[in-house]
Image: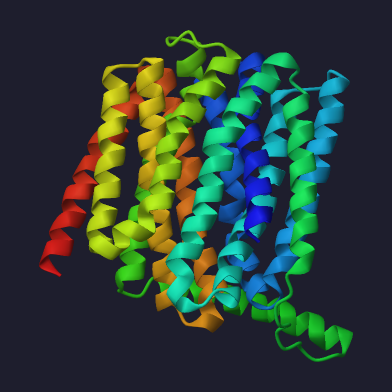
Length: 392
């Protein structure tokens, strides 16, 4: 599973840089560029809950493999379209949306697969390994490679991403978990049962999540963190190729340099958990994100861009490892896929809203405005969470 995750995330990291760079060749409108990011996250809002219910009724490794194959085919078609000089913002919006559907299926299933194949005492280490693979692929190696490949030929990054996803799907073939109980055999009855059960199960996961408990608090905090971060990350490419005067390759290198922080955050989380309280570590994650946002707002240079990207990556890595592990421990096993999906749906709903708000704010008040708002908001949020942890 770890090897498949590493390949998937490497391809995603390549695309993470190449897709906004491609958009920047078509338009310099911050609102349109922010809309591209919003399209990538919108599928979580529309399909997150039913995907979680379906994952609980099937084998998560199958969902992961199918999602990777589907994304590989889509990226292959995008590569062909670019070779035919048929690229447009509308096409990019469609591609981003469909890739988001695949990512929603893959990520939800991956979080549900871990506790099925890893003992409870190893959950932090396992999640840390997966987040490390994500940070190395998406933030460290992938962006540097993606920026350089895009500078050489804009079609190559997307073709390579298709290959990595196909290979990752092949690696998942060696994993087999128990098949859940099947509904009645009669086709008509079965279809009705499944259809009604999916709706009921999806709502059940959301109902569990909205009850007062620590899981709900952490999920809601994560939603605000996602909103504020995507508000500035969605237009970072315009800040980089504009005021920072970076080349396409330079943009990828800046993100790769900053990714060291995200990798470090994922690697050291198990050691930090052994020495510090988990909730205080999450307070520190929010505070770190706030500080680097404000620094980049004040000093928009490539060095600060790398620092902000790395600091945000480190904060997200620690936050995500602890948040996912909390759910895996606190949520009843039979509800885990649905609660994971409900959690991700709320978090991912915040992402496109943040991207759209950030794009509109940058268009009206300047490219640094989203950074100022994000930094101040996250600083207040970290203080409020610290007070609640202290009083608990």
